[in-house]
Image (cartoon, rainbow, N blue to C red; front, side, top):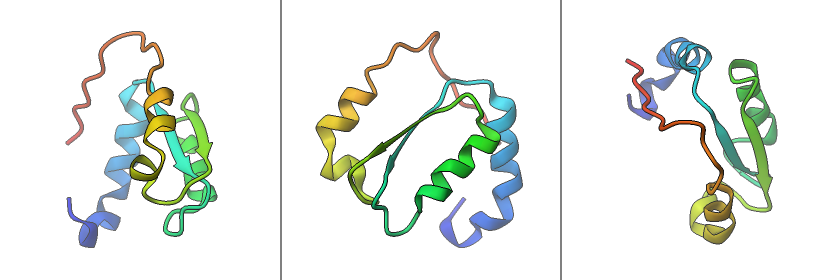
Length: 86
């Protein structure tokens, strides 16, 4: 997928998220100038068991807050995750 055609694929992406059954951690910059806090919360519709964490950062969260992101990713997953959505 490319950004220009992503909208037409939303239903496939959402179905993959709903039906995937994998653990999900959403790290979101609460100051994101492109994707709002409400956009992050919308993921919980398709991923009700996802853990959603907000960081004091913007869209480029990983680059600006590497240590915080790295620490958040050190969570114990129940099993290896293999995403196979087409």
